[in-house]
Length: 396
Image 1 (cartoon, rainbow, N blue to C red):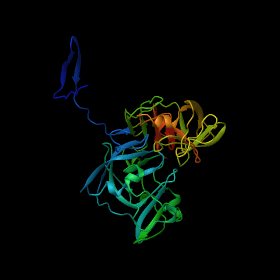
Image 2 (cartoon, rainbow, N blue to C red):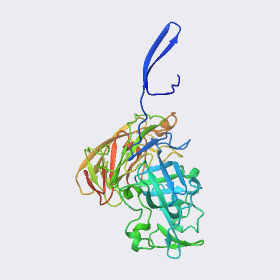
Image 3 (cartoon, rainbow, N blue to C red):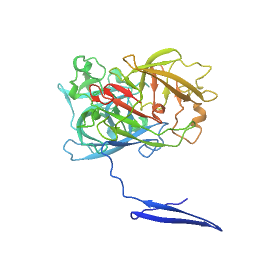
Image 4 (cartoon, one colour):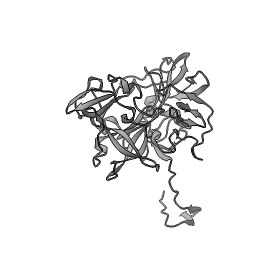
């Protein structure tokens, strides 16, 4: 094995000789490509993720700046999450920024977001300039995750305190909604999401749409109608890491025109219907989930692993299964084949990225990151038109 360093553009011949054996090959170097403005690099357990990351972790990089551009920080290890909305970053990841708070009455607006796995994030809402790929900066409210801010409400009693405890430096929520709570938080104070904090006292509050944590894709000047997540296929048994792309916009440029075989309209939460083993449940496509999680599995086909790994399935052999996704409007329908292998066997390998990893669910059919491997999956933002239709929708 060796390393070649390019010093100029051109072609050269490399020759290797061992004893009487010799071989040669031609190497051509070309000018470096200018990054495409609407493309964000995406790695799964790759260079954009922290070392020691958990399995099937999809990471991007985001630049965050003070509103006057007096200071900026580019933060890696941001979890790409199509199942939530808005940017949330740990205070520890942006120590040099002084982002102004968003006011709420006489206090400061603070948020609590809860996820299906039982985890939660707490912290103040602040205004920042955010840069996705090489798109223009957008000014949006974001959440600065800080579990020691104010007094924790009962609905957010055990939030993650550090990037180490959560497994990421932040979350970029780029699902089909424009805000993280929407209209209900504009007129219902007991929403469990937003609070007004004065000193250490925090009380329920209503929040105008403009002050809620915003999906930054929807704020872009041009590529604001959605995005496409594209990942290469992964064989049964896995690989150490993969690299793909997040392409901003749908049908707004030559590189984001998706010829899709199925477009599933979703409800406001990004859900469609999935039928598995004859039972219909809510389905959703979620890069933030590191496996396929689904209910109603036959235990003789997909037994659950023994504790402490009982969040996963451990079939004796790889199972090939079938589920049907149905648009929220009732049509179209799409049958999707997927595979589930033995979790213990997989994690005992040297690989970290798996297309055949799954576990039981009590919250619907979660088409997690394995669903995206070998596909280009589009997310149309609510109310925004594109060649695939008007959002919200998921297409693949």
